[in-house]
Image (cartoon, rainbow, N blue to C red):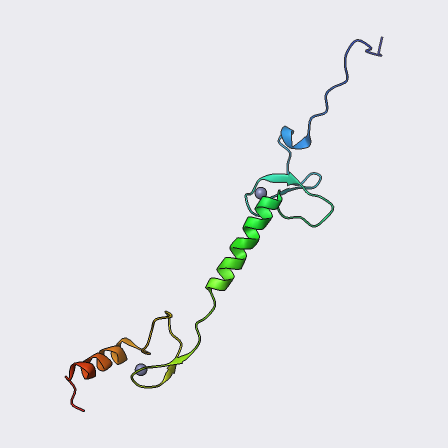
Length: 109
Ligand SMILES: [Zn+2]
Ligand SMILES: [Zn+2]
């Protein structure tokens, strides 16, 4: 009687379908998209290769964008300075104006 031969065993539902919490049994949020996924034995932070690649690329690109421009000399006062833009030629707006004035002949030389 206790053996319910007529009833099928309860279907096994994947843990993540039951509102699984991160604290229980290796579910971790993906570092890229935030979706919880079962962590593998390997040290994985991402739910898929797609997320891993995207995150890696993002980090890689942001890293190269922050490379400081090489120091150069001001075209006017000849002092070395670190330009904010790759097209900067003068160490300061003042030098730029001065150089412009000289070019215009406003400053006698
Ligand atoms: Zn992901
Ligand atoms: Zn200058």
